Amino acid sequence: MIAQRPLLIGLIVSAALNLFLIGGIAGALWMRPSAPSAVQKAPGPMPMERPVGTGTAPDPAPVLQDRPQADPAMSRPVARPSDPPARPALWTAGKDLSPETRQALRRTLRDANQRNRALTRQAQAERQAAIQLFRSGPYDPADVSKRLGAARALDLEARGNVESAVARFAATLSPAERATLADGLARVYAPRQKGAKPQED
Image (cartoon, rainbow, N blue to C red; front, side, top):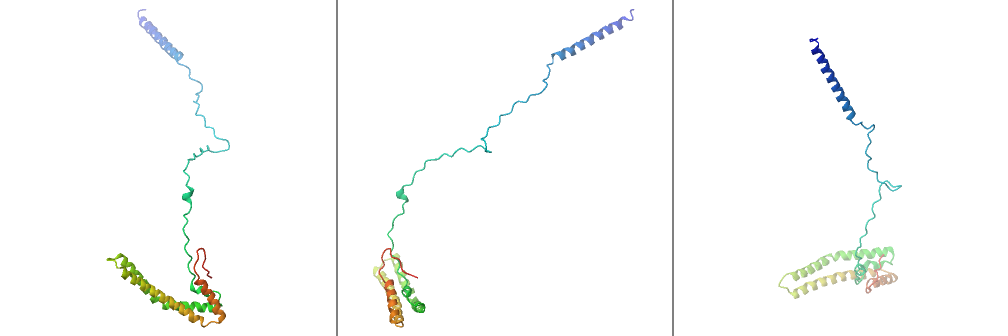
């Protein structure tokens, strides 16, 4: 009987430990809250509403800014006095002549101008020399007038050569053709008026 007491005590202690463990497990299960059956997702942001029939939202209307209006008086073109029209070329005096006579007149004028090239270059040189005298000092008005007078005389000589060539050409024409040429020369040498247009082919 004495030998069985330790065994009995061990059984009692083991049973007590088992009861303690069972009670602890049961209490833990009872205290644990039950998990939700399904996880609910938080609602996302609501999509922005768009106008019906458009893919994107319409841009805001541009803001019109007031701009200063231009003065009508400033926008008008400035009226300038009209320059006198240029004198028609001398060869246009024969535009009413026959084609052969008109070509002969052009050849006559071309030959006269070729002979006048030396005079024309010399007249230009005299004018350039007069212009240089305006810049250099001391200024001598008499020398400037002399240079300009020489250039003017050369121009008149060249013009005289052309007019003499036309006079010799007119001697080869019939009276009717000379009258036609005279009418053409009258148009060329007529005084220029404002608004008149030169008559050319």
